[in-house]
Image 1 (tube, rainbow, N blue to C red):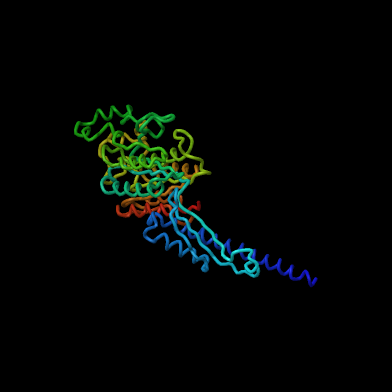
Image 2 (cartoon, rainbow, N blue to C red):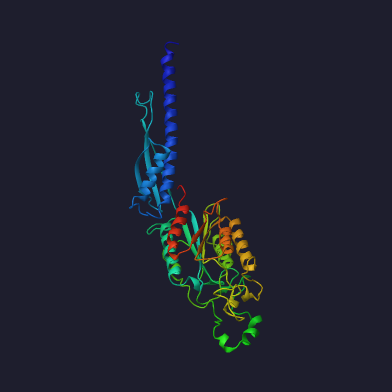
Length: 400
């Protein structure tokens, strides 16, 4: 027993040292993970780590989780927009260091950023968005795209676009749909439905001159998910919110955003919801509009340009924008279908709206219970770029 006692004490000492190493490394790894995630949240504001914002966030978070840890490296990721963090911590040793069996310092690394994302911008292109609003939306969309797909890299991230008014426009035929504007039932929109042409022909000439039968050509085309950054930027830049109006039907924008983000026809570029985080960003000035709502955009004669939207276009004249009406109900229904398909919806309400429309935009958002973390209010056009950055912060919360 006297001879074995030093051996037993040595084994016990080594076991304690190994336990200390394990516990210290586990704490350090957790602190580094948290630091990398905190840093990734600031990438929208400091994408190349040159402003010190990411570095400060990393250091603060690592220190909060493990005060004795020493951050040794904070660097940008190589293949995707990310931040890599490495840190060290000393281990309290009893025996192993004396015996030369281990270093008393442990090290851990982590990287967090943007990858495995599929993002679709669903953007209101109606006339109320023209000028500075649509210009700032384009700028913000391009900046977020640059964050998701940095130049010279090939991240596993895709971006698409659905510009909408009273309908959407396909640039080419896809499975089950013809090229051109699409009605709510999937049929081709040809302007005022033939069932309503007698009413159109009966209008006095001074009303007819305000009606444009072709309200499709000026709508930018839908862009399916793409990894080609130049293609994405060109599609974003094509939006002007000018040309003949057909109203604002938000449900159609959401529907086609879902079509793009799911792998089934009519589009097949999307991956499975198990492999990709799917994001829909819906921006509108807050109201559905079909010419029957009153206010600034009400049409005093019937039919009118609004009769070329996705519902009138298929011969339905009972789908209106009154509170609780078909357009608002379908907006909520389409949002729920998207959520059921595993899609997160961020909603942005630009400008001024009444309580009903604000609540609708909040309801379509995928906010956590008791919060509005996926809903954003932009009373001023100049709030839009920062809101896109705030959304970008939420998209970066991913360890790689």
